[in-house]
Image (cartoon, rainbow, N blue to C red; front, top):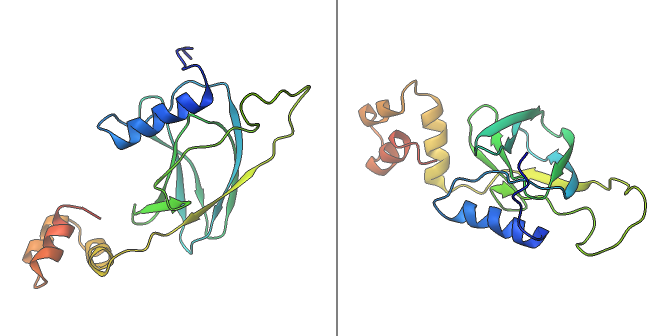
Length: 167
């Protein structure tokens, strides 16, 4: 791993967040600051847990069953995303689409000897969908090809959302 990392953890996290909110692809960046988390599936769906790797690709780490838990040793500059295993729909943690771990110890805090890996509990949930989004998910899941939505006798805006895979 290349050691081209910014000066401190706050700068590293801002760099990852900027990439998420701009045209730059979301990706992990090099870090030595560890974080210990426990992902907890609060949904009735199976959830794919993805680490966003250094190339910006989602790498499947685990599929959590409903109410399942998964312990991960990660780094503060390594983003994680979550998807419904059946539909691919975006799931949330702390009302966000992307999870960025926090450091084990606050920056600048001196410690002597090994640090006990306290795990931060991270709850995975389903976003609140609009009626249009939910209808598009349900109807779209019944079609082999999203473009077939145009042949259905449904509202034009619903056809458009399904065909364009907006949801």
